[in-house]
Amino acid sequence: MEKVIVLDFGGQYNQLVARRVRECNVYCEIYSYRTPIEKIREMDPKGIILTGGPNSCYEEGAPTYSRELFEMGIPVLGLCYGAQLMSHVLGGKVEKAPVREYGKTEVFVDATSPLFAGVGTPAENVNGIVWEDHKTNTNSTICWMSHFDYISAMAPGFRSVAHTADCPVAAAECAEKKLYAIQFHPEVLHTVEGFKMLYAFVRNVCGCAGTWRMDSFVENAIRDVREKVGDGKVLLALSGGVDSSVLAALLAKAIGPQLTCVFVDHGLLRKNEGDEVEAVFGKEGNFDINFVRVNAQQRYYVKLAGVSEPERKRKIIGEEFIRVFEEEAKKIGTVDFLAQGTIYPDVVESGLGGESAVIKSHHNVGGLPDFVDFKEILEPLRNLFKDEVRKAGLELGLPEFLVYRQPFPGPGLGVRIVGDVTEEKVKIVQDADYIYREEVERANADYKAEHGTDAPWMPNQYFAALTNMRSVGVMGDERTYDYAVAVRAVQTVDFMTAEAAEIPFAVLQTVMSRIINEVRGVNRVFYDLTSKPPGTIEFE
Ligand code: XMP
Image 1 (spheres, rainbow, N blue to C red):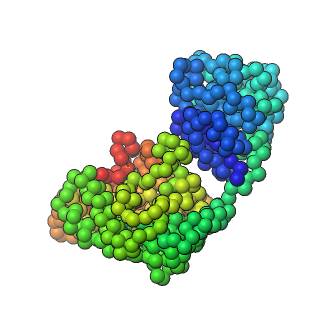
Image 2: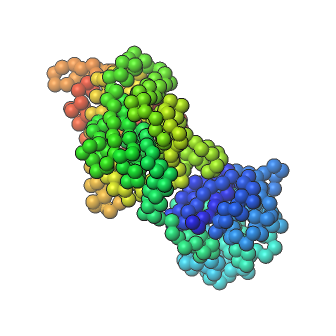
Image 3: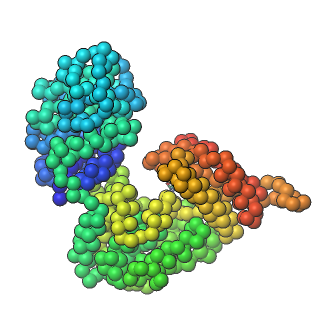
């Protein structure tokens, strides 16, 4: 399989680079810049991309790579730090820039460079500067810049193929050796035509045919699983989340009833969620597997009674999950494989870029391998990004509502009920959350019908939580003393930072009045405006 590799120099966009390459239908993996050259040779990549990074390449001890990397005849594209490093290693000069560039910047590109074919619109007499290298065929386009250092002298054999008002070498190439350096970040969406540039590198310069497709992934994965599992038995802890659901569907197609899925309903799921999962994977569903639903709600409520300390709650939920699962696993007996929904970001985030076997640590599966009798772990999704997992899910015939589910924490509503958890509180938060989701979805669907796209305020994650506060209110002629529900909605790319979404006030008002009218025990609704940081997305 043709492959492009990304060498990670510590940049914040490393995964994004790999995802974009895969969007060009070319398989891509991320490796640390410490990966030895022999290993890279062995992988026989069609191209290599060097990422950005926080260092200055001329400083002692800064991440670097030997000259050999650029002499293997394999096309190399350096991005930001990677561009500077390429120049530095090959004999150019990198220095602190007189002007730091940050943000969306107009870049003038030489449209005769293979990287910039068809990029930008014609620009003439740019800033009155005539650039010897590319005074004709100069196009203007908007790119995302973020750098303190700049390439002040190119390495021998290179020519500048892009510049900005402040940066004489915004991109350079040595076409003969297929070496390319780009100072800005084509991988982020702020670089309006960045995808075109990456596509040009991967497909035209590297000559990749672009055969990485989800339908062929699914086909191959099914074949591999069959080969590996033979007539063995496989056990999967199904949480109903995207990864474990797609995994279940894949295994079901591959080995059918040799698979047993254990789904633990811990009583902290969203409204109807347990039944929805059962409808897809249970007896009435389309998959011919063994599906075991464990209704452990009461066990959890008993264990959680009176516990209000957040970490303690998480711990109890996690430990109880292992207990319940262990009991079920004992009934099933020894299995050959324990399947896990590890995906590529889990692998990369371990810091070793595809080199280590990571076990997901959140409670759905965390610690399980120590308690279950099995011979080997099966992780067929470990090379996929989340959006690819979703595509695979659709290929496998999973319903859209499952495939496009928002993230839901392993400890479930346990972290959305501030203070101690009771069955009554669970019911309140489930009902409020259901109404909230219904109204947000409805408002977004209305927007979509009119404008053809999702509403600009549409959150990446939104839910209701139960504050531990009760306050006085009036309903009809009666005084009430009831709970306050908080509704939260965030827009985020990576869930590491997030902003409160600007849901239209009218939508929030409908949500408020429906929750107070329809959910018993609630007389106040708050909208959470906190961004992350300083807040977290969940409440506990
Ligand atoms: P926080 O609250 O840390 O959440 O800002 C960031 C993202 O992670 C999810 N989250 C969890 N997911 N187990 C999970 O599987 C957990 O214990 C957990 N805690 C938070 C949260 O929903 C958000 O998407």
